[in-house]
Image 1 (cartoon, one colour):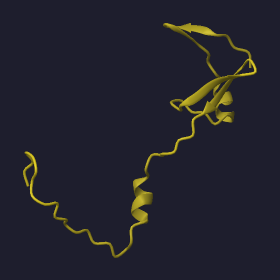
Image 2 (cartoon, rainbow, N blue to C red; image 1 turned 30 degrees about the vertical axis):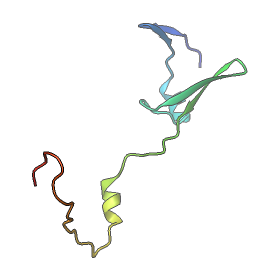
Image 3 (tube, one colour; image 1 turned 180 degrees about the vertical axis):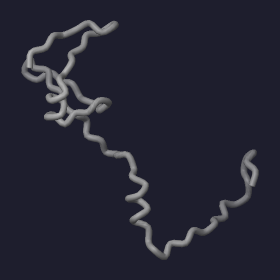
Length: 82
């Protein structure tokens, strides 16, 4: 893929074709680490340790016999009202 460095406000930018990003498994909004290795620009996706929770999957893990209970957190300490 041949492309050009372009001016973008106060910095320079480069556009990647959609197929390049798909092959690299990079999506719009992903965080990437940019480094220089042997004079080459290397772009790597930052591995996320926390993913967005899936509520349905979390609820499916709850035991069938689960019953919520009310907990006593003690007397109010500040200006909260109970």
